[in-house]
Image (tube, rainbow, N blue to C red; front, side, top):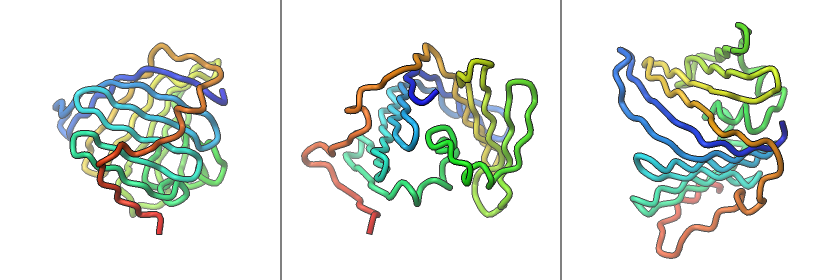
Length: 170
């Protein structure tokens, strides 16, 4: 699976299991390093990687943040899916339980406590979840996944006119 598109649902729960937020959106991935994560509900946000720059755009606050993709990798376990680079995976202890792969960071200095990916026998990712140190859990269910070519324009981002740009690539 080198590229795919899927719709997703998101459920965020706190340490006690109480629902904090539910959402949905679309995800496009082309390995390595290209992705577009478009959250459409409850509030729109867009995370786009063009392979070098990682853009986060929040239309509500009219702000776009640009960071170097290489600097953002450790902050988002989603990059494991998008990059699939051996050096990234080596930063985790990995246990397989059926179709689930449970990853625990070897370093304890980050916010991530555990990352779980459910992969079908055909290589299709069905769901993944991240648990933070405070036990907040973000679970994502992928649906309507279509493996195959993805329109290259999905991996470019041009901030709309009038948007504040926070460029952290210096």
